[in-house]
Length: 232
Image 1 (cartoon, rainbow, N blue to C red):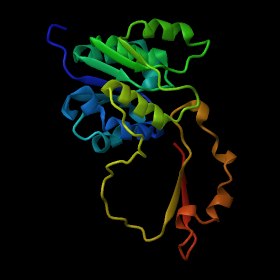
Image 2: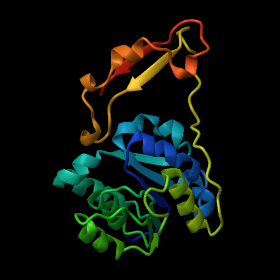
Image 3: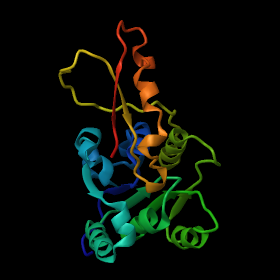
Image 4: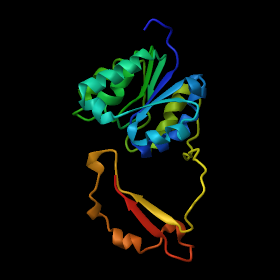
């Protein structure tokens, strides 16, 4: 890269639940990093890419398949070249639970002059990989021992970057406003998961019992809530 480094890369290669928990702290990123939202690029998971336009308004966004990045060399090369060619000035990853060959590799290949990451959970299996990557960043932030809540970790991370404390908040999404075509109240069970090891078989859930009971959110309703299920 011959041009002057510019902009911030935020690595969020995780599932939709973790992405939601990150939102409260992310609102402070422009202030903490001294850049407008328009100069922040979020590199996120493909599983929630359809929500990015709503959740990350004003930011740039690029979705990747984390499993393909980890296992397919040509896909990995293509994404890595794209990241490097952006010429980011700062690369950030605050995930505690992460794969070094995915998240930390993306931080490394960015070539950003300033690379900031959270201290990760390290197992004997990943110790050598993390040691290699952590030695190549400029700042490692310790967000607390296990089992610190993820929201607390996110706010500790952005507070350390900004040099001032930000109080942890419950995440809120700038959700789309749309008419509700159904009069009945529904409790929706999404039985999928971004990780194969977390995908319980449909038969392991007592769906028939759940469907006959009212949702706790609609206990005051006069009729039982319907329960719709969908597996990925």
